[in-house]
Image 1 (cartoon, one colour):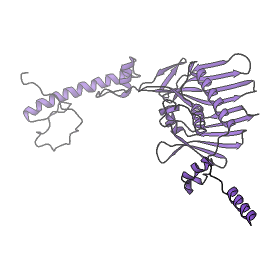
Image 2 (tube, helix red, strand yellow):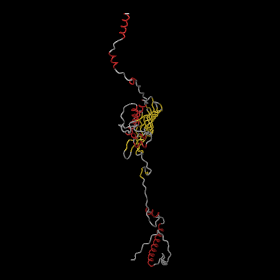
Image 3 (cartoon, helix red, strand yellow):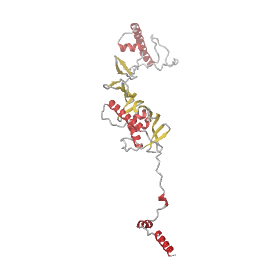
Image 4 (cartoon, helix red, strand yellow):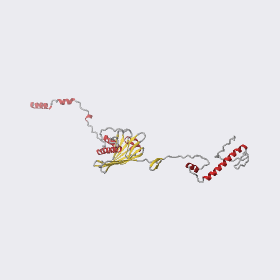
Length: 359
């Protein structure tokens, strides 16, 4: 019995241990609430991404566009905004790259919407958002099409040019993830503007081919006040010197006369015909040119005789008015004027001059 009681005491002492200091500290700390014990799930990035190939392609296109403008305006320090330079800024900032907003833009916030194989770029400065560009992905990382809305690019292309210009369409092709072809239609750019006029470059061909003999070809003209005044033809070969041809264009005016290869201003001459009684148009023209009239002797003699008779009859009629009778051209007297029936006078025939009574 004593051994059994001793064994029980040893067993109870072994099981009952004094708590450690660490366990005492943990027991004194309050238990955390249940909400803090729940682990939060990591946020899933559902934002579509722009491929690195597309971003590098747009960046290289911006450098080509700027080099073309340096050749056109003959300024090696040209650093103004272009279509692809602004688009490169939009794609880089969307991808998380920190960049300063280019100067001169009317809006620095843009939003991208992905719909199947299309990317819509919209201005997000005010609502509703306005579409400025559409990117069609024809073949992933191989073929792209860019449609620029000209009316929304006034601060880049020029205000007056964007109102009169058409939308710009550019096609880009890649080979081994490198830009191989850049072809733009209706590409234009305003290079100067003042209160009276503006100068705009409009191209009929804007083509870059990496492996072609003519690597970069730009054809078009400078337009001043919507009229072409200088033709441009630039060819950048794969090897050799750059050829730049500029030709002044003569403005053809429909209201101008061309004599001896020289354009003279056409003026309207309004001929005022003098009113002369008793003369025909042929006599007036002959008098101006200083030439005689055919049969002028006979006609002039007859006319002078008739004028003499008419003048004499007019004098006799004036004398007859005083005595109350009327004399004809042959000198015969007729009845008094009061008794003679009234005749209708020609309103166009001038009245005879009154005879002075002193004679």
